[in-house]
Image (tube, rainbow, N blue to C red; front, side, top):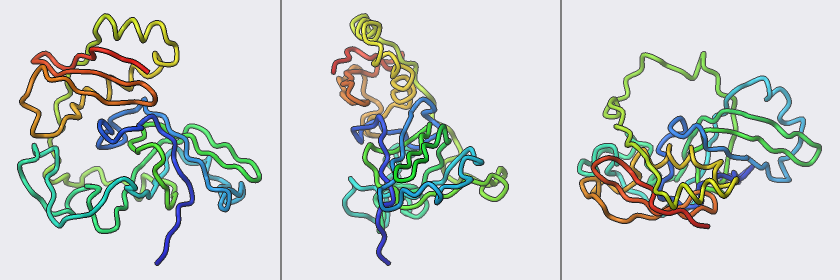
Length: 226
């Protein structure tokens, strides 16, 4: 079977480092699904506005290779589990699934956009299919979460004087402050670095370059530049 992207998504996550593990963890992350011209027929999306959420099937386009056993970050990177008991991007067909909340639809004769929130996808990710999320059929509240039962503890996030100054003087950057907090509170460092403190780290959200460190009191954003 040959599949081709029907759309690509624009998101604030221009760097793989720091992308949330699940969409619900970053409600402030806004994205825009832009349908490819070949598929951008407004009638193909008729009645979609009746739904609040989408299920999207996408490709891990920046991931190479796969393995039968992987080390989930949630298990500290010390324990291997089968790839099919995880949502790791390192899988044979490199396909992923995400549930996104619809904010707005732009439906024109040859141009279709779906604005979504709480995204967890890298900017430029190819979208292979879009389906409505139907809670009556797609949600199982009593289902077991296996080895993922325990939620990770979120870290407190603070900003240095220079970082606060940058945000307060830049209206566009200020709009990303809550998203920065949501991303860094999850401690995006590799599992093997979790026990280290006061080490410099760098990541990016949209065009903002973040410098930050983890202390015993949480995460401090030391600097923000463009």
